[in-house]
Length: 561
Image 1 (cartoon, rainbow, N blue to C red):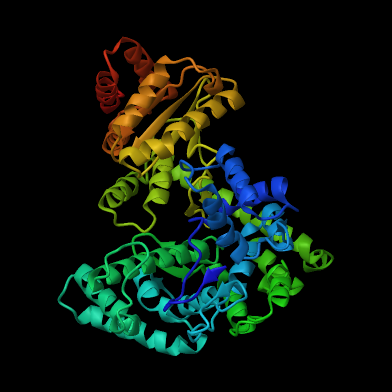
Image 2 (image 1 turned 180 degrees about the horizontal axis):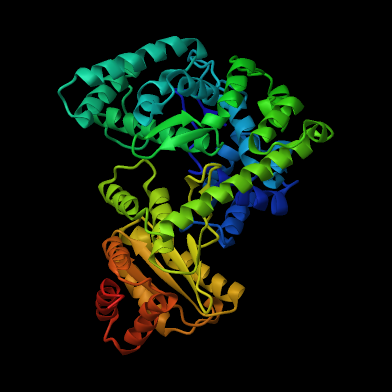
C-alpha cells in the first residue's frame, strides 16, 4: 500500500512512465501467476518472466522482489487492474484493459476512480488526513476551466489541490501567477525557479520549522537539498499526470507550449464527466466495497454509454440512418464509432504522408529537430521518434511505418512499445528498422544494445528478406559503436546471422535529410541500401571500430554523392 504520511501535495502513479506499457506486464501476471500467492518467491519469478519478454526495457534489478512490487502495486493495483489478495487475480477492469479495442476509454474510467484517501493508501495515526480528492478528475476540471493548462501550472498549483474544496483557491493562484508572469522583468526560467522555491517552502513550512528535512534518499538534511528534492518529486508527479491523462485521448498536448487542452471533439464528453461524477471520494474506509467499485469496468458512466449520445457521435463522422443505428446495442455502436475514428485517423495520416513526400513539411521537420536539440519540447523522446519517421518518409521511397501510437487526430501520443522497432521501412527487396534514442553514455548501450539487435532479427525472420538497421541518437556512445561493429562481423544464429546496424548522430541524419531535399532527383531505395552495404564492406576491412565508424559517418554525410 502507498503511504500518505508526510505527503503535502497530490501524487500520481509514476510507474510505468507510459500507462500502455502496463499491458504486457499485466498479461504475464494473468497468464503465469493468476491464483498464486503474491509472495517474495512469486515476485522474483514474475520479474524473471518479465526480463525474458520481448517487451522488457532496461537491465533488470538487483532486488527482483522489490522491483516486482514496485511495478505491480503502483499503476496496475492502484488503478484496479489487478488484485493481490488473497491471491493474484486480474480484475474485470483489467481483463477489459487487456482485450478491449478502446483501451483509452478503459483507462479513463479507472483514472476517474483514483482517489485520495482510499483503502489502498495508508497514513500515520498521528497525522491528520488532508486528502479528499479524485486527482485526475480535478485536473481535468482545471484544464476545462482555463482552456489550456501548462505543465508548470499543474506542478506549482494543481498539485496543491489535496481537497476538491480548494478548487477555487487553486484557480485564483493560477490566475495570479499568470498576471505576475506578465509583469516580471525576470526571464521565465528565473521567475519559475523563484516561484517553485517559494511554494515548496510554503507547503512544507511546518516540516522545516520542526527540523524534518532529512530525506531517506540522502544524508543531507539541509533546507536547500530538501527543497531541491521536493521540487524534483513534484516535477515527476506532474509528468506522470500529463502522460496518463494524455493516454486517455481526452486531451491534446502542446509540445512547444508544454500545456494540455481538451480535444475539441471531446468537450461534450468532458462536460458530461465533470457534471455527473461525484467529487467526493467513496468507500475510503471499506476495502471490499472500494474494490467492488474500482474493479467494475462499467463505472463511472461516460457520455458514450448512452445510445442517443453514441448515435450523435457516429453521425458526426458518417450520416448513417438513425433508424438503422437505433437497432444496434451500445457495444455495437461503440465498435462502429471506434472504426469510424480509426478510419478518419488513417485518412489524416495518409494526407500527412502525401505532404511529407512532396517536401511540403521540410521546414517544419528541420525546426522540430532544432527544438529537440534545444530541449524546447515537452516529450523529447516521443518527438524524436515521430520526427524521424517523418524524415524517413521524406528521404526516399518505400513504405515507412512508425510504431508509435497516434491519437484520433494523427498527432503522436506515445512511443513504440518495447517489443518492436521504432520505425520499420519496407523497400521491396530489403527491409530497414530505424531506432532512435535520447539516451547517452553507458545507459545508451544498456538500454538499446540488445533490443535494437533483436528487433532487426525479428524483421529478418518475419519478412524473410535481407534487412538492416539505422540507429540515430544525438551522440553515439563508444560501447554502442563497438557492439554494432562486432555484430557486422559475427555470425549469430539467434539474430539471423550478421547484423548490419549503422549508428549515426542526429546531426549526421539531419545532413542526410538536407541532401535529399536539395537533390535534383528523388532518392530511391538503392541509395539507402548502398550505405549499409558500404558499412558491411568497411567493417570487414577496418582496423578497429573507430576506423569503421569514422568512414561510415563520412559516407552518411555524403550518401547521395
